[in-house]
Image (cartoon, rainbow, N blue to C red; front, side):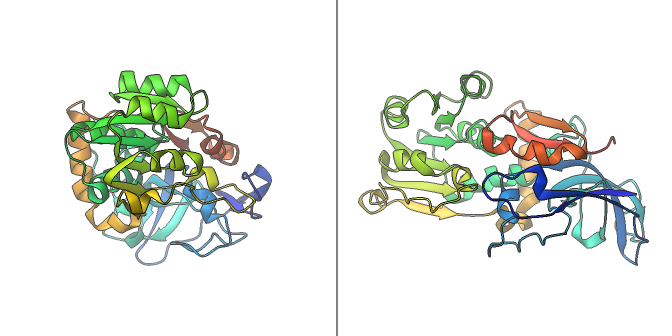
Amino acid sequence: MNKQWLLASRPVGNPQPANFEWQERAIPDLQEEEVCVRVLQLSLDPASRGWMMDIKSYLPPVALGAVMRGIGIGVVETSRSASLPVGTLVQGMLGWQTHCVTPASRMTPLPEIPGIPLDAYLGVLSHIGLTAYFGLLDITDPKPGETLVVSAAAGAVGSLVGQIGKIKGCRVVGIAGTDEKCDWITNTLGFDDAINYKTTQVPAGLKKACPDGIDIYFENVGGPILDAVLAQMNLHGRISVCGMISQYNATEPVPGPYNFISVIAKRLRIQGFIVLDYMDRSEECMMQMAQWIGAGKLKYRVDIVDGLNAAPDALNKLFNGSNQGKLIVKVSER
């Protein structure tokens, strides 16, 4: 039997368990060139909130009554495709379920790299790693000596962005929501400074942490933090817009940044992106990230929730800030 979470209703504000419906159904027989993948781990991402909304975006919304969309890693249990034999480790849109029957062409086989644990494939060697790697390097082209500010800096993407910035010779300042997170990114990950936005006025904190202004900003949150950064950007600064998590559960229109005029005065370049833009270059990223992990230059941590049944409750850890690193649901054992 396949156990699944279906999207039952569209949330207003924060997603609630009542927005989902549990279903158990027989696994269908495979057609030619299909595989059945047993889900090992499921990634919970802020993008899930957008997929639940009935609005036009880069992917169509999840239909009511459909399996909730989600990226995961799994192992091929049965196969009618020579390209993915039984036992192959794969990654793809597996959904919030224990098993996924899908065309083999929609799955990406994963190399099993010695010394790389399974959770690294969602914590670093996945859409998370691609987002951090290309969102920083391709869009902002960091140079040694420049100042990089990262919001949601203790999150899955932000923590990698800051470390890549350090590898490229930047001074890196992270913004996070607890003292523990600030300590982690400075003392463990090597950020130069950190600002707890819940206990420090961000404009004042940025002035202290970035005395020479800000050259690069990696945007994950939006809202007042974006406003504070815009006011302190340097001439020809670059902003990579990855996400705006502060707005995802808003029920009223969100005001735009008041300091947007800085874009003109400072001749700033702002570019949004999604990870799908870079899927054809994923191997380039994965090879480099694995090398940095092996060399001890790149660290990560995961927040693993046990059991598919816990996914609806766990999703809100992304929005209340209680997750510690990449949020993953452990669905089954390898």
